[in-house]
Amino acid sequence: MAGTKTNDFQDMLPMMANKLGGDGLIRELCNGFQLLMDREKGVITFESLKKNSAILGLQNLRDDELLSMLREGDLNGDGVLDQMEFCVLMFRLSPELMEESEDLLELALQQEFKTNPTR
Image 1 (spheres, rainbow, N blue to C red):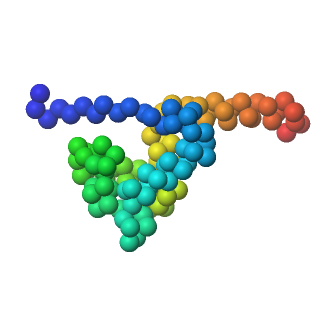
Image 2: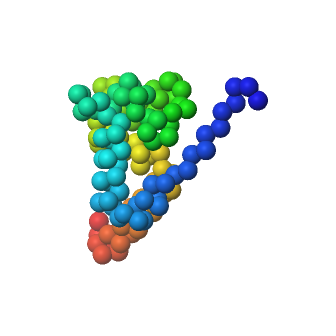
Image 3: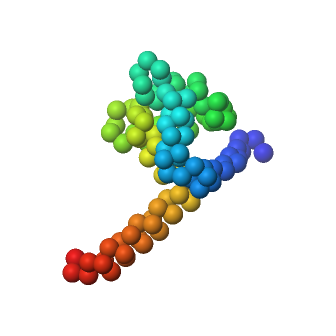
């Protein structure tokens, strides 16, 4: 079918989190950031994302898809991704990790209110 594109996205972050633990996962995300960033600017730009995305198997993404990813992660509106914005974006793009973190937050809140019922 002409013009039809399917993305076979497999969310590997939950598996990585289980294998590496929290600190290890953050280290790997930081390594991913280093692969994609513009070496001179120290941030991920559209150009560096386009140039380096093939390393991560994203060579088939169109320019508008890359721009969309960049805009989605750009929390401060400067047109680029710093390391923190990149890590936050990776978590946001992982439905399973987002669900797990929501569950953990709910559990933590329940425990907090059990131990301090006057709050």
